[in-house]
Image (cartoon, rainbow, N blue to C red):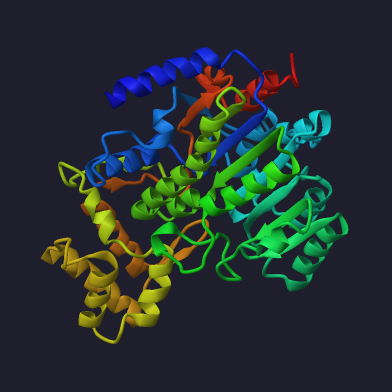
Length: 458
């Protein structure tokens, strides 16, 4: 009966989708989220959580794909892909809000604000001035030009910008100048989730919610960091602010950046938990859509695929065992630091840590060959002779790399790379105009279609 209900809802949604222009536009970007990542989360949802219904975005009436190549490579980076999704123009890798010949190109969010007076909110679980969010307000030749990117952000007039700390956080003097620039342009700058008085203090908010000063993201869901911000929380805060300052029309972009961070590290369990957390953020918008079905459009997609994730691995379990994810209580990034600090002086003490944090031996069987492989690397780590696994956001000690390789394999989750791939990414949509996204999309077509639906283009 539920399936019939959602089928009828889907048909009704598509029929209504051409009836009016959307007043409220939500674009959700799962950074690095390929179909393998989505299917891993959906498989966990079905086989472990026991849900008959698919995860929320897979229940939307439109499900399609988008190609992600950049102007200079079959494999894009986040800057070029973010520019494509924000502006509708291809550019070279590393470029933000510019064409390949360094001409500024405007984002849909900026045009909606300037031409139609839409409120605009930008939310991410990574640094708010990282590549994907920056493409909505900045025009710079390189994604690493953080001070210049933030000058553009301070002048954007966007109503709400939130994420982890600035990417220039390790340079205190530069970070100070950056935040002062926002204040000079009328922003209330808040560190942390903010009190009600702080959030109501100004019409323009810059909110940074780092769980530690050096972190480039707000913390992994799987780490359950007490007091840390979450993407659903930031999404609610943004929506609440936009309803205060621009209740009649607004645009929101919400990026689940931690999916990409976990995928770069080939941390399968963390990827699944980040996508489920992403679903909670999407639920915030979907609840709003249910109250405003004839005025709201929600589009969910990704900038690129990271890691080439698969459900099923060579010589792995014939039936992937995603229940193992429930025994993983720490991200690969945190484990890499903790195992050195808390691993103890003996292998038995390290085994206790592996049991407590990852479920090895206590819930996940470990054979003699696997234990010998870990023990050998543990010995090299203790002797300070271990190698390093280098990835974009974190260099992992060799012991951690082997431990998580074994964990992924026993779970039945695989990766082909620590980098991006040229694989297509999913597109899901619901609401006013959602039918426009039902064909195979080039990523630049997503903002182009939003332009047409909102009246920015004929």
